[in-house]
Length: 257
Image (tube, rainbow, N blue to C red; front, side, top):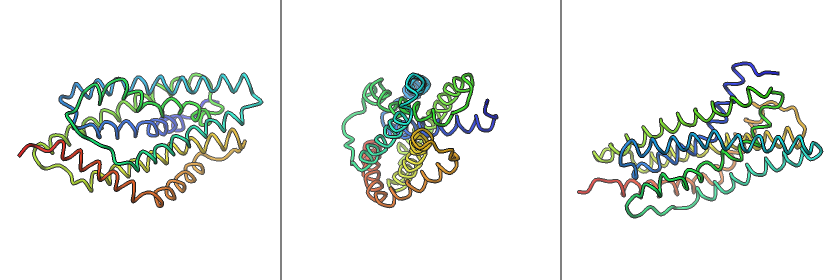
C-alpha cells in the first residue's frame, strides 16, 4: 500500500537527518580549510551524489538477498541491525578521541573524494536498515524516496556550508564562538545522530529479526532512551574531546596578531 504524503515525507526526512548530520558536522568542522564558497559547493555536490547512490545500493542489494533467500531474512535483519550498531560503537570511540589539527589546510585532504566516501559510509549501510522502514511500500515511492532524501542531505550540506563560512568570517573578526559553545553544539548534534541512526538499527532488529509489528514512534523512543544512557556514561568525555578539537580549530583559524 502506498504511504500517505505525511508518512512519506517523514520517512524521507528521518533518513536524511540520520545520514545528513555527519555531513553537517564534517562541513562545519572543515571551516578553516574553506578558501572560497566554491570549495564548499564542490564538496556539497559530491556528498549529495553519494547520499543518493549509496543508500540505493545498500537497499536494493539487501532486498534482493532477502527475496532470494527468504528463509534467512531474520538473519539479514540481524546483520542490518548489527551494521548500524557497529557503526555507532565506532562513532562513539571516534568522538572520544582528541583529534590532531595542525598545519596548513589542504583542499584535497579536506574536501576530496576520499573524505567524501568516508563521510558517506553511513549512507551505504543505511539502505539495509531503511528496508525495515518501508515494508509494504510499492516500488515507485521507495525509488523516489532516495533522491528526495539525498537532496535533503544536500540542503543540510548547503546550510552547514553557510554556517562554516559565517564562522570563518566571525573568527577573522575575532568575534567567533567560544570553544565551550562550539563543543556543546557538536555534542548535541552527535547525540541526535546517534539517536536517529540507532533508530534504523533497532527498527531492523525489531521488524526483521523479531518479527514485531512495533510502531516507529516506539522504536524511536527506545533509541532516545539508549542514546540518553550512552551519553550519560560518555557524554562528559565526548564533550571534553569536542572542546579540545574546537580549541585547536579556533586557534588554527585565529587571525594573526
